[in-house]
Picture (cartoon, rainbow, N blue to C red):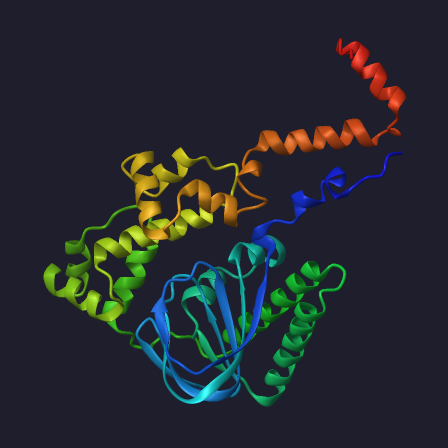
Length: 325
C-alpha cells in the first residue's frame, strides 16, 4: 500500500476550529475595556485585587474569584489596586453543547445561563480542585504532546462543568434587583428573531424612548439600533457553524430584509465578510461548508481504503474511463 500522508486519512477534516480551546495565563495591570466577545470566557484569579463590571453589576475580584462570561454579557475590569494574576480559558459554547449536554430538570439550563451569578468566590477546597484542572491545562498548552487538542477539550469541559456545579449549588439570582436598563440591554441582544421597537422596550420600564436610548448609550456605549444589529450578528456567528443552515435561512430567521442586507450588516460589525469569517473561524474553512463535500470524503475513503491500492488497480480504472497517455 502506498505511503499515506495525513491528507489521505482525512485527518484535517476533524481538526475543526469549533473544537479549539484557548488558555492563557496572564497578568492584568491596566483596565480592560468593555467589549463584545463571541466565545465563552472563563477566568480564575490566582492573586490580585480589582473591580469587575458585568452588565452593570459591580464585583470585587481577588484570589479565588471564578467567573464565566457568555457572549451576551458585557464586562470590563477597572480600579486595579493590585495586578491580577489569572488564567483565562475560552471556547465555543457549542463545544459543550455537543459533548457534555445532559438532560436536566425543566428550566435548569435557562437558569444556568441567565439565573445564576456570573462571579463565584470559591472556598479553599473548590480552589484546589479548579487549580488542579488549570495546572493540567497549562501543562498541555506548554508541552504540546500527542493529542493535546483532545486533552485540552476534556479539561476545559471539566473546568466549565465545575463552574456550572458551583453556580447551581449557590443561591440563585432570584430576588436580586438588577439595573432595569441593563435588563433591557440583555433583552435587545437576545431578541434576535424579531425586531422589537424602542418604544415597546421603553413602555416596559416606564420611560420615553429618547430617555431609554440615552441611558442605554450611557451604560454600554451603543444605541438600541446598534445593539439589535450586533445581537443579530453574534447569533449569526453561532448559526454559521451549522453547515446545513444556508445563508438565506439564517438571514430570514434573524429578521434581515434580504441576504444583501445581512451581508452588509455582518461586514459592518464583524469587520470581515461572511465568507472570510467562515474561512477563518469555521470548521476547516469555507471548503467544508456543504454536506455534499462531506459525502465526497466518505466516498473517497470507501473507494480507496477497502482494498490495497496498487498501480495495477489504477491502470484498470484508467482504461475504463478511457484515459491514455
